[in-house]
Length: 611
Ligand code: M6R
Image (cartoon, rainbow, N blue to C red; front, side, top):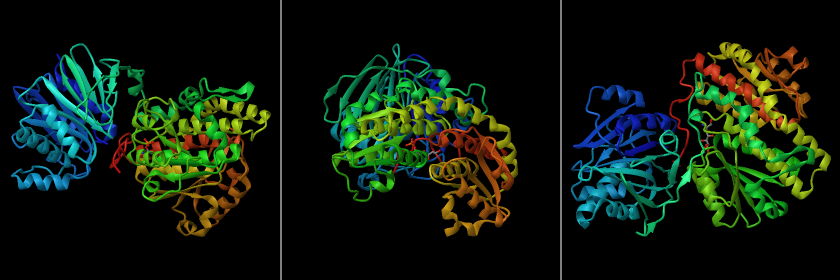
């Protein structure tokens, strides 16, 4: 987590860095700081958001055409001015911003302290810059070489940018495990954790590879690897557009992203489905068709919302392609000794493509010989580069910390993979493939209709906003939807919420139900409809307040429930795409009414690049 921005060129660095940091605040917003190199280094840092930093720096000397900036998600050391980046070497010659974790920082700190170093913060980052300065002095080397040597001693993940008071026209950057992009302009370079701060200045970028170090001056970019070999920069063209990073008239990114879903689902299917022929084509994994045809099982690894999408995938792949699927929390998978064989296919799902736990699970499965496929949203991120093949979700940048359109795009891709695998294995008659793909083609229109529940969800939100707890129930393919609904509510409104399989309620959670407890039930007309009605009866018998997501025109549930939200009638496979929409809106409105920061909920960051 944490976002970093660097600039070197002909323009004033401060406004470019401030704007860039605001775009990266989704990565963390515990503190922000900027160092500007002009006559010496001026550094400004403040606990809180980038706007707090701006207020703090008002009226101060903000000149400088070289600078580095940081927005923090705290790991080592509480969020405070003192622990905010940039951090400095003892003599304050070098300033660093860092995203990642230096795992052996305590040992390094002890060694440096024994040589007389003193530290001003509790961070691992300050230890790294002291180490670099120490090497520079001891080995009498330049900054680039000192950084290279230091990084051979470091265990952990990092994306760093370093400014040097003595060489005001250069920056040194490096990465391992944490992302970094360098934008190439006219006599200027932009360095950032992702392309969003760069897009309005240039489309030409270089994604730094793991263990690459960049030496950047206003007219040169030199890349080396950790073994001191010069590397050729691979310049790519950004395909992102600035409008994608703006709110487009919506009050929040989350609301914009919820409403973008018809478009994102359509983009996700474009060129991949041929309903009349009953055919799915997935270019990114076609090389692994034979593996999919013969796989004994599929293991899905993911975290958070992506893990919920994985559960939907399990249901669909088992139902249509008849391959056993296991869905694993990536963070747990990596710390046991999972049985993985060369015949296994591991699917890693990640919006950001940078989640540390998912990356580590991928590395483990790869070491053990499995074929790894990715489902990621951010093009060029780390996970797609680690996997053998994959399918991008093409949902466009997701800025709201709470994942919305990425989830429905992941579910769409998983539906495509389920049907593609069914096609390969011959587990569905052609007529069924035609029927399912025809239904899927309509999904964007149906999601558009599902979005019409804005007013209903707003009203229900006003009814539940003072609750302290909520339960979400679903069965079959509706169960992961219930989990996702509960996660959305808890992460942005801070109401404690749990998702449960509706039938499990009687094995414990039913004890929680009383007249105060909102119980959100996925009660659409699908294979478990009758059973869910019985579960609603059980809740009502204990005076729970039932909010039911029902199929348009439903009367049976309406009679029982306190509130209903209708979604269009559709093929069961589309249930997660449709039923998730009202739950996203319900969370959004509830959080708004509770005065929460919807796009930047407390303690969270969009891209979780630490274990
Ligand atoms: O980028 P990823 O999909 O790998 O992220 C996984 C989770 O961190 C993420 O889904 C998280 O749970 C979101 N805050 C959910 O809204």
